Length: 171
Image 1: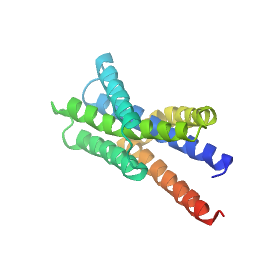
Image 2: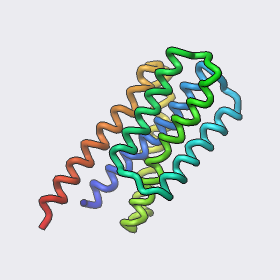
Image 3: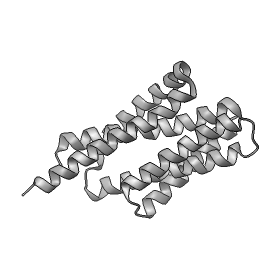
Image 4: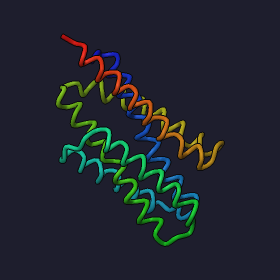
């Protein structure tokens, strides 16, 4: 895989990490709690999912899909049961599942010994997602919030498919 494509994939990967983290907090905050402890618990859940993803090798596509589906389930839960006592628990579980691919992504980057450049571009994508997610929520509500991870996961799957085909063509 070319260096340029690896940078693009890293940037596109960083965006949904931010969309999942910030989006989950915004979704839970909008209907349940905006206390610092909620943010701390959701961030801790993300880190726990990431650590698990570092230690256990999980297949990329199903892990990404599980994270996106968990997030979509959380956004859906905020619509059907906005003041549920289970919101906090469901949010923590969804965020932990979303963090699994973060660990897997960094493990794969470390195996390829391309961590410096990959982390730089992943962080650039994360920063873009960090800015775009609150804007999407502010101007498009939960519908836009739900769309961001779907769009970026589709882009990531498309880029992964292209690089898989390129690897098959290499001598």
